[in-house]
Length: 271
Image (cartoon, rainbow, N blue to C red; front, side):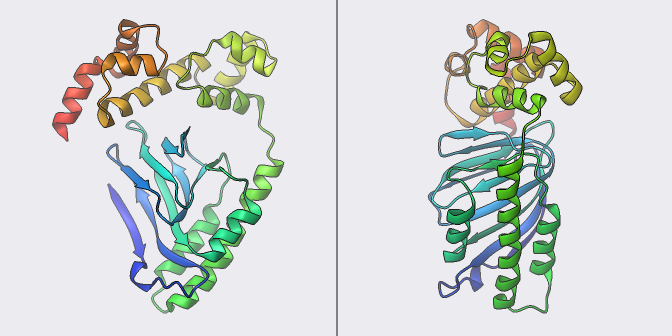
């Protein structure tokens, strides 16, 4: 893994209405994983490419290319890249009264992801500001404050005016039910489309059937549980609502190439 990081921890001071802790660009690998609990920090992280998982305050979302995920103050969160297509992302970590104001005034509570919303130009400008050697910390704060305001307003407008396409609605339905048992008939009823129409729309947009997408992402989540929890194979099968352990193992082997027990053993050995 490779990162470009600009660190300002040592300059932070409570007298400022905003403190920029760090900013940077991360070229993640399959082992990238960050976990925090109850820290007084905010973060905007824009996905330039790749996919992964964010678990935050009992919600699970799946940030991918062109999405923004948001880490909020005092949250419990863990996030990690997918093994097959790790993130490349650009990010900024900050805190202070001005940050509190921005989030309270402009963003709905419990907003942790904004889909398909490019803020790359703003984030690139933050990196340019951070890397400038001729700026004092107070100058940096002033300039980053302006960019954060622009980002928050951009996110607010996107959330208020974004109308999801039919394919995006289908994908959202699949994503929020990834741990549940979901039948295509349920999706048809919820969205008001025929099964054939849903399959056609989804495949045209994402190049995969809804069923294959749902199955693949269940297995991605299973990989996380295998490597980062002590749950048994059967407990993971139950948690992800597979019919039984045998079907879970069969599905996992079809997609990954090895059964879950072997995947857990071989990858933990590598670590």
